[in-house]
Image (cartoon, rainbow, N blue to C red; front, top):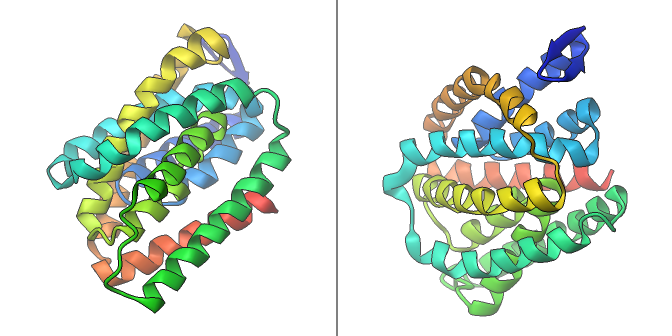
Amino acid sequence: MVELFGYSLTYEAFASFCIVGVLVGMSKTGVHGTSMLAVPLLAVVFGGKSSSGIMLPALIMADVVGVIYYHKHAESKYLWKLLPWTVIGVLIGTYFGQKIDDQQFRTIMGVIIFLSLGVMIWMERANKDQIPDYTWFAAIMGITAGFTTMVGNLAGSAMALYLLSMRLPKNQFIGTAAWFFICVNIFKVPFHIWVWETVTFDSFLLDLILLPFIGIGAVLGIKIIKKISDQYFRWFIILMTCAAALFMIF
């Protein structure tokens, strides 16, 4: 057993915890979908609700890396359109988060993501020049992202759908997402500390152990993304989003 800051972990659980750090680091430098694998892996080790609080500081640390590397590429106009609605989604998620069955939540969100992907692909085939840059679209995606990030740290798919629909190039996509998530994840911290009580001083110290693994994942993510063109990056994100939705449902 490994004893760390009040947590007793088997060697297998500690190895899984370190792998989560690598996956989170990769996700924040462009390899979308790896965080979807990290969420259930962490839940197996710490349990559903506790894992959401343990994951949050790790996500913020990885967000800092993503912002430092891609901050010049962010499109601020999309941030201002999404963030107010995302705040509403976070507040809704804070209230209902303890009332929703995990499997019901995953099934509902998986279906929503599939429907959104279908609408996006249909719009692209119907009129490639038409971009759904409407307030209602930003509102739906923002509230969905806020709700899912609060309940299960699973906002990546909703954010990906919105930014893909805006047809952002690869670096702009990653930079905008990096700023979005660091703002939202910092906003979530007080609710995890004082409402859900899932972030504690001990859990924060435990997360600090992940820093080198997050760094390794971030470097791997940067190297992988550099080898993918904008055209293939778009389809890579779509496929990873589909995979994430399937994972949530099944």
